[in-house]
Amino acid sequence: MAFDCDIVIVGGGLNGPALALALASAGQTVTLVDALPIKVRKNAGFDGRSYALALTSARLVRALDVWDALEDVAQPMLDIKVSDGRAGEGPSPFFMHFDHAEIEEGPMGYMVEDRHLRPALLNAVKKVKAIRQISEDQVTGQEVDATGVTAHLASGKSVRAKLLVGCDGRSSGTAQRAGISRTGWGYGQTALVCALNHELPHHGVAHQFFMPPGPLAILPLKGNRSSIVWSETTENASHINGTSDADYLDVLRPRFGSFLGEISLAGARFTYPLSLSLANALAAKRVALVGDAAHGVHPIAGQGLNAGIRDVAALADVIADAARRGEDIGSAPVLSRYQQWRRFDNTTLAIATDAFNRLFSNDNAMLRGVRDLGMGLVGRFPALRRSFIREAAGLTGDLPRLLKGEKL
Image (cartoon, rainbow, N blue to C red; front, side, top):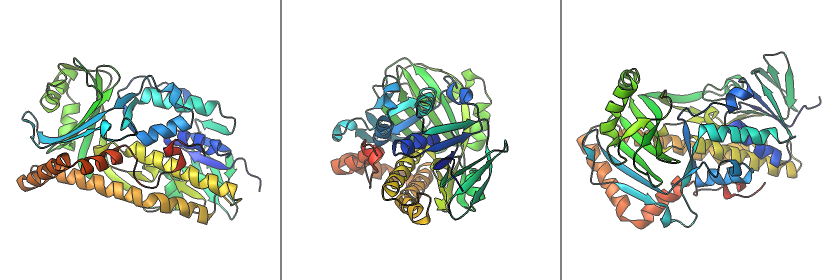
């Protein structure tokens, strides 16, 4: 049977368009399917959502020729300060301070708002002839045979390709139809997410303040603004989110502190239930999973999107090399290489974020002593600090070419 394209990607959020661009740059033809209209996906406006792009993730965006649209609106993350304490009492004297000057490569990463990153990717996709977009339609079925896979759409249309990639989130229909099960659990926590204006400059410093109910991340945006990811118990979060803007800020202020002066809301408020969700395989017959479809982790380290971008880079690398060798890009040996490359890293990230959340999201005196001692030791030894900084920047492990800033 003839192919309509080389690869069908299900999901047009962030990972889907990034993967489409990466694969097209490697000579593949791609069909990108998303249920939402393109206008809705591109014109979300400023709603407070932002992403911490690790240095290597920014390299990929640059290698895909998208960075020019983001350079003026991306806020470099120069330092990260990690502390432990209780709301209203200030941080413990034991803390970790990571300074980008301790590595040679530059800033550890960049904060980019959703309203800039999403349109930049979609505008780039629109310019590439090898990418066909199908919007306001969704994949409802997938049929695999010896030579290819056919994606059946709700509209009655179908698309046949050599490979189907699920970038369709934690409830991935692609994974379910492929028979890939998931392992996971809830944390009894909910993330309160918003953006704030503040009086004083943040100087590019990101803060992670661990409190018994959950961590508070304060992430620098352009200007005197910061993005907030504030984890609370689900019961507390529901109560807090149900209050007025003024009361919401009154609850936040003792946790936030006064180091940036007076604060006010900049945009809408959101809540997200927090859980761990790990696909038990990253590939099945002519199917691969990327991003949240493969792994959903606690936002404690801000690595969710970066893990997805690593998937994008690894899958594109594997497919580019397989195509050059004349291999069937959707074959089991090719997909096995992708799974072997990413499975350990994804599982390690899930275990690490789960362990960190359990270690810090409690008020146990013994555990508090252990974690304060640990932070003090990391802060005292330069080699340990550098290893944490390089991890945060995404510079560790076997990096695909796009994460090195190289073309495929």
